[in-house]
Image 1 (cartoon, rainbow, N blue to C red):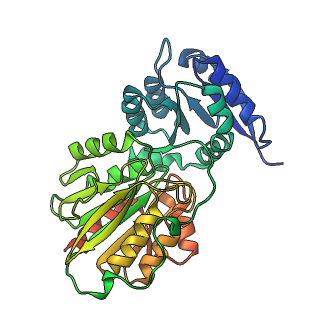
Image 2 (spheres, rainbow, N blue to C red):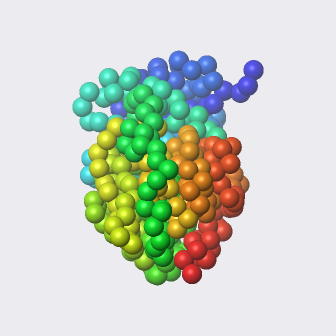
Length: 361
């Protein structure tokens, strides 16, 4: 029998500790070894039995979750899942937690918490299993993917954008673009890539799986760190040199073309591959309108969103790259893309900025 994943739940809410424990007990491969109402109490318990994964709240007495996370990552790096509210302050602090090394975020409401957690059992279990497999060394070297709970039916990309072998790729243009898709561990990976790019490079469009409120903060944070401009995309924004557009949480982003120029369409729609925004939606749109004038990059993330879209990009003549397993926090999305033969090249994270710069010249 394989070893069970040992989990500790640190949350000042007795209800959260109880319901999450009950959810985990349904899976024979995971066990809750301890719960604690605050980090100080948790540290005492961890001395006797260190967990494989921590499920951690942010606002707690005696020591807040962010301080605790930084302490853990500095002294004994451990996969951490943040269980946080989407309140404005909660979103801001959760962003700091992702930057400090948290693997992902489970967003919880302030009302009807018990029903929410019970309905989200599958997402909680999936997040724990992904965190247990996370490459914590890669996470430390890079030092965000929030996980939006609730398992919806799997809806294909056709719900947003039909497959087409025709489109603007038929017409000549010199405009180029870079499309990037990423998920779990992607916030750190994107920071590592974008902060190494010059102020002037090919326009970039990005889907990072994130809920609402987080993407605007994430883009703003990156904008303060990068030479190029980074911001949350708005419907109708032009894809231009020196600008990176991040798809807003809760909306799909597609690339369209007007004459020789590219712009983005941001719109609502169903969850595609259980995500909104979806990487497959973005990549398919790029394949249809940009073809050989695009570079597609798929990086760290859980699941397979983006794998088929990257293959469509490659088939349309685009250059395509998958992040190497050695630097992925979670080798899910790149692995699926590689299995489909969607990537021209497989390279580690530190080489991706060089590829974008070379493509821009």
